[in-house]
Structure formats: C-alpha cells, structure tokens
Length: 116
Image (cartoon, rainbow, N blue to C red; front, side, top):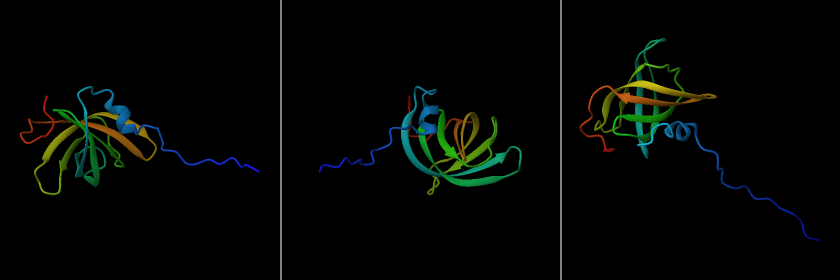
C-alpha cells in the first residue's frame, strides 16, 4: 500500500534584513562579520557580534539583538581592523528578538568594498 510522505523544503521566507534592503535599491548582498558597539543612545554602551548582510556605498544593513533606536551612533569593526567606522541608525524593522538595522556611515569610508 503506497504511503504519502513529506520532506522538509527550503524556507522561502526572506529575512527581515533582506526585506529592509528592498528600501535601499543600491544594496548588495554581503557577509562581513563585525563587532557592533552602540556608542550613544539610551541605556549606555552596549555591544555584540553580528554580520553585515547588505551594503551600499553609504549604508550597512544587519540584524541586531541590541535595543537600538533611530539616530543611535554605532561603531562597526571587523576582526582585522580594515573596517572600523562610525555609523548612525537610519532605519529599523522590528522582528521578535532580532531587529533589522540600516546604518549610514558618518564619514566617507575609503576602504569600503561597495562602490557606486
């Protein structure tokens, strides 16, 4: 007697960061591990490790568990120090315990890999 079976498929659900990236048409998918530190904002200094998932010539997009708010100042640094920049939160998309964040560089970044 034949039996019906199901197999788990790949999830087609987009991450909240990918959804936020749609508002930044110049964004490019990336995967850069960074240390994220909130240097200004309510609650004092806080930090975590995260991954930049999308970037434009002027912004980075990533997921965070920190209690970030619009206009918070952040420092993003990769492990070898080739990326060590300050950015300001310009967009947030809340999704449970992780928030999709877009942050704009506060100064021109000479070694940034995403160019117009």
